[in-house]
Image (cartoon, rainbow, N blue to C red; front, side, top):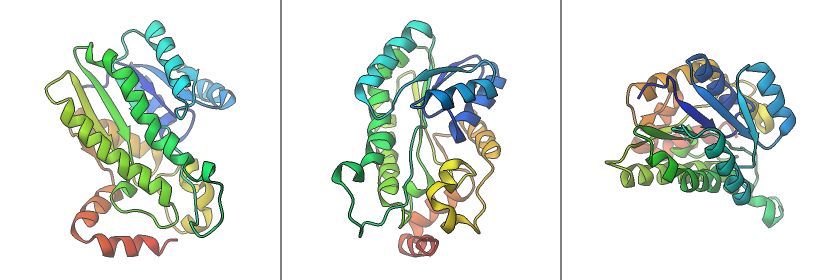
Length: 250
């Protein structure tokens, strides 16, 4: 499936991987719609990437997803690619006191959000002759990172969900792809992890997106650029060793 002349919806498209996906996919002649919670950041993204359509929507809010679906199918009836990219990653000690409501905030955005997006948009995608869902997980779906326990759990959960979704859609017009980025030079990669990542260099975001598009167009169901492939292999062959090595960063 070539990512040319498509209509593509990207959640979390105001910065980082989502914004770079929007930039490169627009350059290939696609119609691209980016969503995000912050209107000001979406306006900045639209200024930085001329031609980008933006819609304010919270990926963790079921009602917002319903409203987003209504607007998208009305304005962009040819939608044929959904990229679930929205996510947050927090540096979290499980030994510290934390409100229960806050503890699982990543679950709502990183895991429940993509599930709800797929559930709402899937009937429309199935009516297209050729369509696709791309779920953005992480190399940490394969080997968890000690200081990002809830994030790691959400990405492992999304990895499992994506496999099941692909199996259930086998034989339909909808292709399911898992994109598992390694550490990438984005605000999320630095953010709360600046101290731990100070000596680490993430993959340039433009390079990651180039490899992602190339892998998707090559027909790969799982795209694991750079160190994500190492984590995937290590998680299968030597999970304890890989976990201990990654834990040293924390």
